[in-house]
Every structure is written in C-alpha cells, then in structure tokens.
Image (cartoon, rainbow, N blue to C red; front, side, top):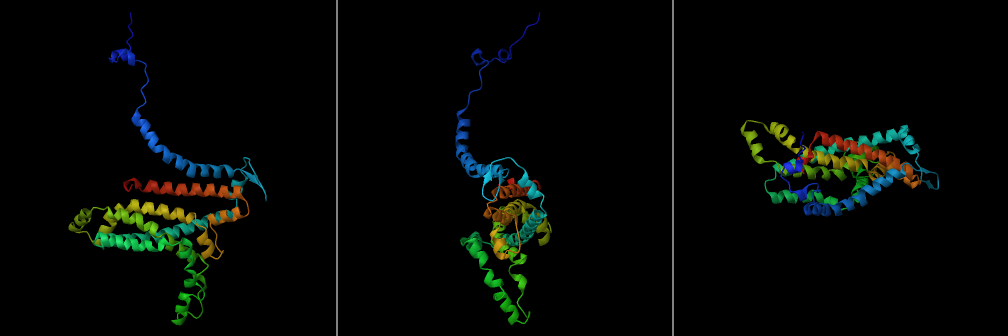
Length: 306
C-alpha cells in the first residue's frame, strides 16, 4: 500500500498557508512607485518619439502628403543608394578623426589637471576655466572661426605678412579641415570631463608603488594610469561619437555646403517634406550608433566608473 505525503505537510507548514500565494510586499510596491516617474518620463520623451520615427519610416509619401502604410521603399532607397553610403562613410570619417583628436587632447588636459596641479582648489578653478567657452552658444563658437580662417582672416593675413605664403590659403575655411577643427573645439570638453573624473579617482599609492618599484614615467602612464582611465575614455568616446554623428549645422556652415553628413541629409529631406525617408535614415543612424556604443561597452566596462 502506497502513502502520498503532502509536501507542505512534510515541511511543517500550517494548513492555512497551504496553497496560498505569496503576498505582495509593501517594499516591492514602494520600489515600483519610486521608479514609475522616471519610467513615465523616459517613455514619453524617449521611447514614444523613437517608436513614432520607426512607424513613420515605413509610410509612403509624395510631394504633398504622407500615407500611413507599411512599405520598405524608404529603407531600400536608403541602403541601396551609393550617395547615401558615401554620406555615411563621410560621417564616420568625421567621427573617427574628431574622436582621435579629442581623445588625445582631452587625456593630456585631464592628466595635467590631475597629476601636475597640486591643490584641489586650483584643479577646480582650471577645470572651470575650460568650461567658460561652453557658456556661449555652439553656433557662436563655431562661427567665430570664420574671421580667423577666412581668405582675409587672421591666419591668412599673418602668413602673408610673414612671407610664408604669397596668396591666401583656401583650404583653411569651407573644407573638411574647418569642419574637424570646429568639431574638436566644440566637443573636446565632453572628453576632458569623464577622463578627469576617472583620473581623480585613481589611488595615488598605486603610482607611488610603481615609482618605488623602479618604473619610469612612461611605464607608469602605460601600465597604471591608462588602464585605470579606460572607463572615462569610453564614456567620453560615447559622448563625442554620438554628438558628431548627429551634427549637421557644423558641417553645413564650416564646409560651406561642400560636404555632407547623415544628419545634414536628414535635414534636407525634412525641408523637402520627405519625412518617411528622413525617418528611415534616422533609424539606420540610430542602429549604427547603438552598434558602436555596444562595441565600446564590450571592450570597456564603464560600470567601474558609474
């Protein structure tokens, strides 16, 4: 004869609790209530616009109207056009060049503020000095390069007076050089800030231990400081790359309309009321940027910084 024993009875649980669902704790409810405002804000201002862009990217259109539909024409035209591919490659070129320059400049500025300025008060003062230009508009700071780099600008006038050139240098303005220079000027601080924050957290005893072990300055930099600065460098890279990929006004003004970027192409499409085509380009650009960010996060664990 076989006897079946109830698990709840075997564990000694009271009969009243057998089969009863686990009650919902007040602490869990409080956690959901605390995160609800942020979730609503992100959902309304971030997720909803992105979802709307994705939906519109499948619509059809003509010169006057939009037609809610589900067509792949916009993506086919975006991904099947050589002009579009050249524009994306040009944007990636700007992103890589600006990233390399801002990383180089930003790291050494942050390194100087961290290890060569002794007092915290002076470090903060010099860091705030770096931020002073950013109290003005990006457009004003960008346009300020025009009288400097122009045909009759400060640089060309100085070169001619010194006898280094016989006529004005044309490529200083309205060229890729001017675009990169303006972007580096605009976005270097976004690289300096996270790297400076990371370097300030490095335990100075590690540097002293490496120096006591006989390491040279470059060995300390390469084997101690750079590995510990990677989270800040990764955060700065994300900032700079996303800003460059989405920039169109700098490309438009500093190239004189002679260069193109993905954001500028979307701006032109919207000016022609080609909203679904611009939405398709926005989705492709978003996917590309997310892939780049995912690649950075796989290489560097920025949770150490957060």
